[in-house]
Image (cartoon, rainbow, N blue to C red):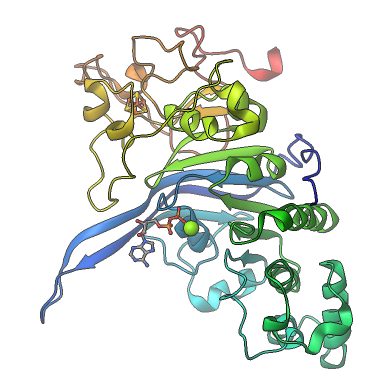
Amino acid sequence: MTELRPHAPSTFTSEEPLLEVVNLKKWFPVKSSGLVRRTVANVQAVDGVSFSVPRGGSLGLVGESGCGKSTTGRLITRLYEPTAGQIRFEDTDIAKLSKREMLPYRSEIQMIFQDPYSSLNPRHTVGTIVGTPLRVHDMVPKDKVLDRVRELLEVVGLNPEHYNRYPSEFSGGQRQRIGIARALALQPKLLVADEPVSALDVSIQAQVVNLLQDVQREFNIAFLFIAHDLAVVRHFCPEVAVMYLGKIVEIADRETLYSRPHHPYTQALLSAVPDVKQASVGGRRERIMLQGDVPSPINPPSGCRFRTRCWMAQDICAKQEPPLLQIGPRHKVACHFAGERGSTGHVPITLKALGVNSHGDPVPGEEPMQGLDAPGYSPMFKDRETHLRESEPLADR
Ligand SMILES: Nc1ncnc2c1ncn2[C@@H]1O[C@H](COP(=O)(O)OP(=O)(O)O)[C@@H](O)[C@H]1O
Ligand code: SF4
Ligand SMILES: [Mg+2]
């Protein structure tokens, strides 16, 4: 069985964002039955997420099934129309571009899907599957398409002479390699990989992750790597965002997120990952069992969406939604009582940002802070340890 290689370098490949997502939303309308079909509710699948992916870097997006990861990926590739928000790709907001205006960006943002069985057309040969994007986008002269297909098959570790075989003649891992070759054909700058190894046998997951790491380095491709398994993302991504019910609840550099998670949901997810269990619970080997299921995104809980499963919930959690506050150089968390497990304070850390008292009621004269939905990190942040002062700009440290 192939081992996962040591982690990818933890340096952020570049500070320049390739992709910046700002307050992105996708609500799916629920229609009434009958002749006049009115919208009676909305599935709030993605409800205001902001993050950035550096050029050539990779961001991991994790969370339980149903929390909005795939919808986020499909919005970025514009397979879905966003309800609101911005998707800035190399300084162009592609969120509202028409199909025609989107064309030049189609080749630059590619997606790898979870299921290598259903994402490949069984009636087409591998040569056709990998060669079609080359032809459609005029990437190479017609008589050079086959040569390029062979090269791409070789890059992903397949026999280049198997171009005239059908998907059914390959194993699951090999089919995912075909999907990767197809995504690479257009030399994308960004790959959205939606649980690319979840459907694969455990014994071959590491091989495919290692391949993705190789292609990332070789072609300087940025990744949005979606997974429900924190262990996989840890090896691939220097930065990880945790989603719950359509929102990002914590985002941080890998070292911080895995060793000092500040959101109860992240702590619970991490306690289920064997190799990081110790760190996530402050030295005690204790699995945090989450009670119940993820609530329906049609009618999410008021205030903090995690409160129905949170063992620390207080009154304020039902009244006020915790903003995603920056509490470290590369660490943001959305929890009124954010802190390492066992060391959370009694005073909500969000009062100043929200302009409320500790019961969650507005304080006359205090205004909520603006701009908390900006992606990326600021050199100034709210230091949770010292509570009262803002931290020094990083450059002065
Ligand atoms: N096309 C759709 N129409 C209505 N609801 C959808 C659609 N796609 C996803 N959803 C709902 O949106 C939520 C998020 O789904 P998804 O993004 O697939 O989550 P994840 O990938 O994290 O498992 C789920 O509740 C799902 O049922
Ligand atoms: S805001 Fe409240 S309910 Fe939400 S995670 Fe924090 S303590 Fe739990
Ligand atoms: Mg999904």
